[in-house]
Image (cartoon, rainbow, N blue to C red; front, top):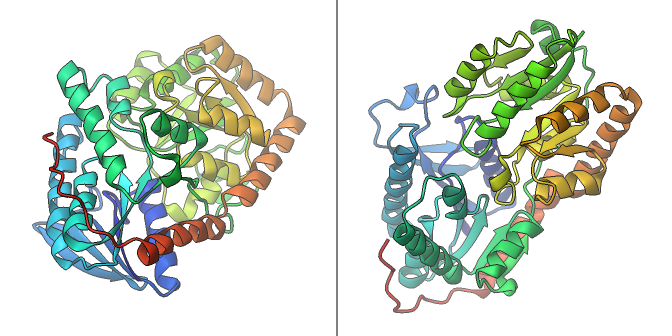
Length: 418
């Protein structure tokens, strides 16, 4: 079976999406499928080997990678433009699609729904949507989409995209309820969480070379590792305000690891607050991630309150596999908070309640045995529910069913204007 994976971001780009999509492609190829990845030219600083390239083909781990150029700007308007450019490239690639092929579309961008529709209508291909963030809801909550007419059009387009897919994978029950409330048939919804390589990410001693390199071994380390983006910037700023209240605790250190659109803004706020107890680090090489996470005592999963129900960061699963207690900074009814509670692997605090955040940090710092128990619970839960091979086999089964049982052509309905 030919499986065509569409993802905006792929290795060597940094972040969870490139890693997860590489693991999915490699797994499906190892199972004997003909796998093709449709992605973009890497972003800086990984773009140097692709300078002046509009398109490039590569072979990797038994599958084909096709890279298309989009713009490289980080501004949200530029991001929207990149989504549109990428979607146009994926439509062009439909020239190589045949009946019975299955398109795996990782959303966002929601515009990939057009590619899926055309693949079904013109080629008789199957379509699986993997919904990682719920758009346009996230854009609306972030204030990026404000015009009432534009919001209405985007919401109609969203419903159309879901209607035209064969199957939809969502990563949590909260996502499932969101889509069902929008009229999506429960019969095509599948809850499949993101996964983690529990053989690679495992509990390690805090006293490791990376911890020694950054002088973390003798500190109580509260760490955030991930993209510094619009979905968490407000809460990350609250973390800095919490750090200010804890400046008197000389052995407590906040470590923020990552890059992103909002990193400069966050660094500026830290300087304004004159925070000597906050350390900013760039993304570390992926092979060092187990040591990095082991250097922490508490791992942070922040989500701005109004966006808490629209995303489940993949970093949560990585942090749990590392065997460290989780401090969720989310709404108490968010999916992240529910997972932390179900796994008994940490604490949660309202992301706008600085006193509660500080209180939860102090509770964890003063309870080393409890931290040890919470970390063990986190690891056990990750192995049981999010282990890579288990989750990827669920994906393969869904994809196989689409390819074998559903090769119908599309209707004559026109694509709505967007």
